[in-house]
Structures are given as C-alpha cells and as structure tokens.
Amino acid sequence: MTGGDVLVERHDGVLLVRLNRPQRHNAIGGTVLRDLAAAFDEAGRDDTVRVVVTTGVGAAFCVGADVADFDRVRHLPARELLVSDLIGGEKGLPARSPADVPAEELGNAGRWALRMWALEKPTIAAVNGAAVGGGFGIALLHDIRLAASTARLGTGFAAAGLAPELGISHLLPRVVGFAAAAELMLTGRLVDAAEARELRLVSDVVPDEELLERAMGLAGRIASGPPLGARLTKRLLRRSAAAELEAQLRAEYTAQVTLFDHPETRAAMDDLAQRVLRRRG
Image 1 (cartoon, rainbow, N blue to C red):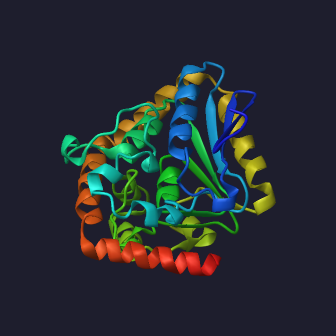
Image 2 (cartoon, rainbow, N blue to C red):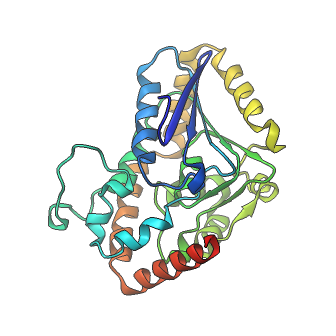
C-alpha cells in the first residue's frame, strides 16, 4: 500500500506498517483497522516477509478511538455501533440490525485483533508517542514493544466509562501482573516510557530519533535467522500466554455492548468528546 490510513513498506524481510492519520494522532477511524488487518494478512501470505514492525506517522502511535466520531455514533444501539465501519467494519458486508448480532459475538475490534494475533511471524511495535485505548491494545498485540522516550501508554477506557477491548483485559495482566493491570485499567492513567519499562510493558526505551532505526535493526536481526524456528517459537509463546484469547475477546465485546447502551456511559462519552474538542478548538 502506498497511501491511505495505513502505509506498508518492505525492507529485506521486514514489513514496515505505518499508521497514517497524523492529523488525528493516528486515531482509530477511517479505514485504520481494516487496513491494519489487511497488512497483517498480507504478511502472513508473503514468504519474503519474516518480521512485521508497526509504528505511527507523526507524533503519536495511536490515540485510540477518534472522539470526533462520538457525536455521530452515540445515538446508535451498542451492537450496531460495535459492528459498524467506524469500528473497523469490512467493506461490502451487508448492514445488520442489532437484533441480528448475537451478544457473544466478537465485534469488529475483536475479529481484527484475532487476525493480528493469528500471524505466526514475529511482530514489533515501535511506540513513537501516545498509545492509548485501542492504540494501547494494538501495541499489546505485538510480541515486542520498544518505546520512544516521549511515549505515553495507557488503557484510557475508564475516562469514557468503558471496558477495555482488543484483548487488553487478557494480555495486560500477563504482561504486568494482575494488580498493576487492575490499577491501569480501572484508573485509565497513562504511564511514561520510563515507567512502562519498569512495568515491562516495553522492552526498551530509546531516544525518539533512534526508535525506528532500533526497531528495524531488531527486526532485521530476527529476520536473518531461520524463519521456521522463529515461527514455531512464536507459536509456543502464544500457546503458553493466551490459549483463551478468543473467549476473552467475546467477553470484552459483551461488556462493551452493555456499557455502550447505558446512559452513564453515553454521558461520559459526550463529556470526554466535548473536553477534547474544546482543547483542539
């Protein structure tokens, strides 16, 4: 892909994926989720690709849901919203009424997360700025995370009265432990790069201007080894860490359906959107 909301470049066995909505801090909107899923699918099909590196264009990695969409979608029933194009829906799929969407469904975000998780090739997130909400989930779905010194990471969902998605509730406790994960998810606070390293959210912190070079260097080192060994090693890591991810994604979707339809959540989302829009104005 040479344009659009996600850019893809090939570099000697490494597929570099760039989130490309810098004017919106790479917020999840437009075709971001759909294009990311397509990029990971492409990496899985292409035998010349051995490692995937994901980063953001501009000053942010991904700030999660685009709050500019909140006013347009807050009236939608929860099940309709969570399978809409705004949450990464697939082009060409027929629209479904809320009654057609079972409560145990993954939702578009969950289906996309599974497609990304299913990639058997090593993945690296180069977190070049804020990684919040869904952006934090994107980073967690990678095998290795490197952070720029100015990066900030956090779930963010608590500010809108929502529960985590994209597998955060499954993966974060496995990375930082139950108590730390509970504190981060329930408060929604952001951690800076130094604390992220202390919590083992990221493997290393590097100067902003060196982040992509360091990530690509690490990817090149992995790509230079035998691909089958890397693939089977990743398969073992996945089996040990997340054998029940799909079940957790279904639970997350059910929680979001309940919350999106609750008046308190709608009010919190409206308040958050207004505060963000005032800051931008």
